Image (cartoon, rainbow, N blue to C red; front, side):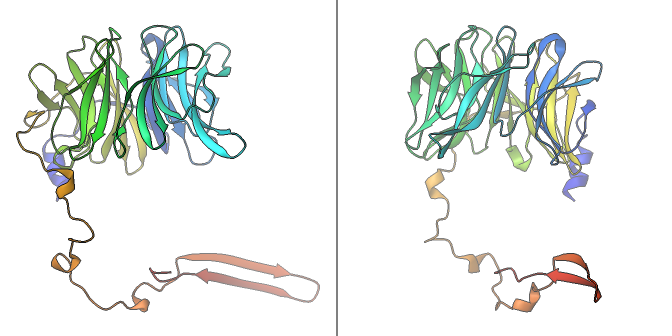
Length: 348
């Protein structure tokens, strides 16, 4: 029923430019209208690839564990990935991939920065650092030193940052205590936060338009995870995709073209949107009333019997084989051919 409803509203229009299985994520615009992305086929070491407008794909490097990618014309690719520190800890650091030599240069040492973006200045990056359980927005200089711009409270979180074309605003999805996830911008001059949305949706992967007047992001509005566009001045949000799966992330090129990383039942695809069409009605970025997070049911107040039919547990309902393995053994005395099966009930 849901599938038919989605189809009736018109599926996302746009050419599928890459569909090799299985994961194609962490999109970032590259030079000459190309696109960098992270590809994992579940068989080999994940790869950074570059997709060109004519459809050709170039493999750049095989690197495990990358959590963010960002490209700069002079500085190359900015990468965050985990690395062993002090022989016993796994911390995330910043790396620079030189696109000419394909050398990977480490920028920070055990800095615990898991998501980052280049600044407009060649020697600066901005990242999300986790220290003592708290998320920080930090600025990283050319020597790898991190300066704290803002620190959140315990229990609060910051997602992947984006930066405006003038280099003055950082846009992120921020989870605050009692209000949940919303889009917020951080002014680098005034060092102040501005909340751009205030609703019950969960936004992620925000990026500014070239003129800085709009923000593209992904959210789960009305139960569908799709690409949205916020007009900051009017606080109006448009929906730009309608997928049978869901949109993971969008990347916006300087020429205005948009790529989507879209999950389907056959793996991730990368789709290019040549024209933008809205799906459904616009809605406001700020609601007069939202459900406070602390009002959701807790273990002490939630009674599952009110929502589910309770019946006695029976082992045999789920006790059946889920795995099998052929066996062949041979020696000078005998030959054995058999099948080993294994399974357990849902409680193990």
